[in-house]
Every structure is written in structure tokens, then in C-alpha cells.
Length: 127
Image 1 (cartoon, rainbow, N blue to C red):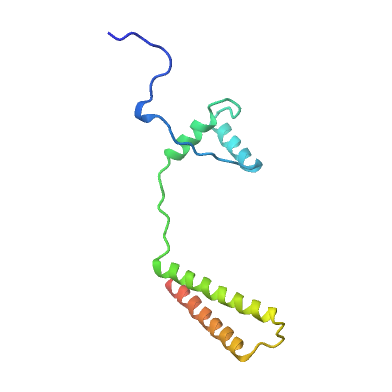
Image 2 (tube, rainbow, N blue to C red; image 1 turned 45 degrees about the vertical axis):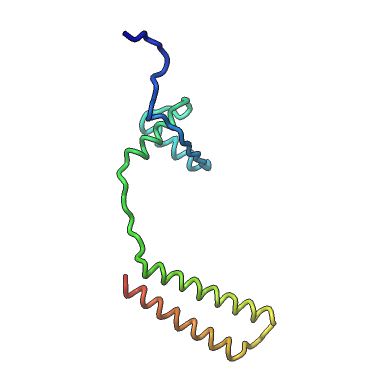
């Protein structure tokens, strides 16, 4: 027969070894206070907020959000690259104080505009 030792029960494999720190601004913290009050919990009482937030998060069902198809994510990457190229061309034009860009720059800008329109049409067609 085991002798009663008293004290806290051992958690065993349920022990919480990992910590996540949350930081809230004033308005966010006020929202947390309101939520706790709606459950009749005291925000100022030690050991109330952490367990409540843990249960609130872990007892929720996960919702799978729609993922962007690979084609569209690649499309957005290409759009980003085009935007970067346009930005670089504009920087060069401004750096050289070019009042009227040369023919090559105009052609590149027109070409990038055409590509942008095609990409926008493609995105709209897929949605």
C-alpha cells in the first residue's frame, strides 16, 4: 500500500514543456478582458488567462482554408518579377535624369504593360 505523499499530482507525459509568448496591444488586451468577462472569469486572477486561452484554442475545430493553386502562385511570382523589372527601369531613368526615355525603355514598358494585362485577364478567367 502506497503512502499518500500529498502535493501536486505528477503530469507524466502531459507535462507542458513548450512555451509560446503572446503580446497584445491595449485594444487587443481589452478584447481578451471582455471575452473573459463573458465567461464570468476574473482577468486579474492568476492562472486564469493562460488555461482559458489554451482551452479556447485547442477545443476549436480547424478550418482548412482554400489554398492558392500552384499556377496562380507562380503567376503572382512572375507578376512580382515584372514589377521589380519596371521599378529597376524607372530607377535607371531617374538616375540618368532622362526626360524622354530611349526607344528600348519605351518598348520594355509597353511589353511589360501587355504582359500585365494578359496576366490580369488570366487571373480573372480562372476565378
